[in-house]
Image (cartoon, rainbow, N blue to C red; front, side, top):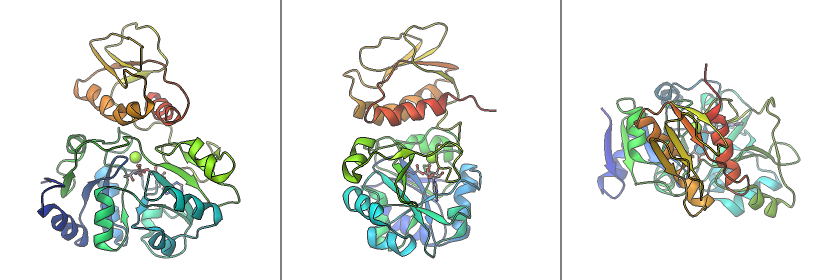
Length: 315
Ligand code: TXA
Ligand code: MG
């Protein structure tokens, strides 16, 4: 049985804390997407996350911390990592740094690096109250669309987790940007809520994207990811036989089920609506989805990245 409590419900914090302390699983909103959290120091609890999501065990998790001081207990921060943490934490940035000590091995999937993030939102309050990190991937079945609303979590994970905290739609709607600060130069592992321009501004150079076959394979670097059930076709300017259409700005693809990510052509609004639009197609059992062109700039980079991965057909 999965309980659902509104974050505004006074009982929600204590329920979440007692379940997490006992090694249970709680879906908790962050400012990016909903996370599926477990005590990062409890290996069995972290294993429960992989089980609930059906996640391949080689794909490591992010440890969510209350502040840089907590993060530095587990990871070694070089100058670039510290500069980025100072600027963007709390926020939509995950830093991959050399692992120092502590936290369950299964969280890192055996790597000698660790992904750390200081989030905003209810996840931040709960990590502070626990005074220890929470392991949390996005709260969706492995390979599926990330959850930006409580009912997306329920559709995918009901019965597999102990509690869901409902805080309405998340602010950003896309996962965090992931930057590796392991070598001399920062490397982009996943585009996300913090844009490349913002990173460049604070690093003094534009971080290169990791090679697709790099050993530090990350996130959505898995080819098929973020996928709705329907087949996606990108950059469509006209419809053929699709039964779903995803528009942006003035594009006007009309299908049986049509949505617009942002009628006013605002990439921030589009990012925040992307996963809920994809979830709508799932709810309607749409087989084929035509997606209009979306500018490849600012947050559009991350939006196009997610859509490209969602478009890769699964085996
Ligand atoms: O916004 C977010 O980042 C959300 C919220 C809940 O914080 N979390 C999230 O987690 O998107 P997840 O697990 O869906 O994606 C994190 C990605 C994983 O796919 C993993 O490949 C990568 O981070 N990752 C974790 N540890 C890593 C490491 N040591 N080296 C390289 N990549 C790592
Ligand atoms: Mg994910």
